[in-house]
Amino acid sequence: MHTKNSCVSATTKDKNPGELAAQSVARWRQIDLALTPIIGRRGILAIYKKALNITRNDFPWLAVVSEGDAAFDNFVSLQSVLAQQTSAAVMAANLALHRSFNKLLGSLIGESLSERLLQSIDACFHREETHLHEADLLSQREYA
Image 1 (cartoon, rainbow, N blue to C red):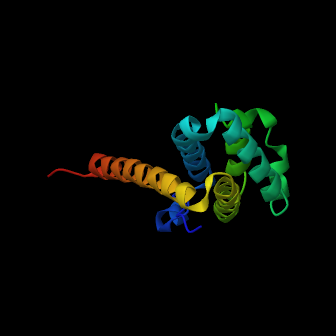
Image 2 (cartoon, rainbow, N blue to C red):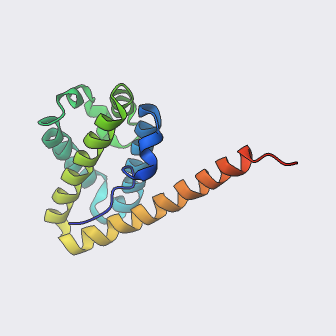
Image 3 (cartoon, one colour):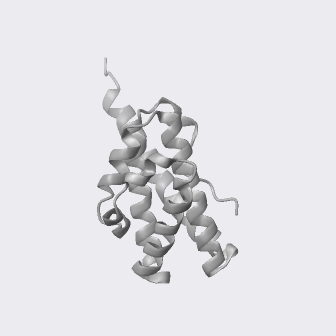
């Protein structure tokens, strides 16, 4: 599956780990909103937990993420753990977690449908990011 991870882009290189962690949480919330009507909250929870367990093999510091985070309600533990890492580690762990989730989702509902659903989430997430970035630029603009 070749879905793009919206949290790993050229613009993320300049962001601090806290910003990257917040972006990751925002994306998980988008995934929850988009997929709950299709596979249900329990389905998302099961896939997320499994993806987290798989990702912990390469990023052992993810082991401290609490099981409560898997409810998609707050992700306080995930955000906290990610924010304590370097930007490169946040990007790598986040990419690995999303890849594991995407692969598991694809095996459940089919790769084609999974890819289309996740691409729609990415498109929505990118529009929001672009809109926020443009608003930031406008607020920094000096008028003569």
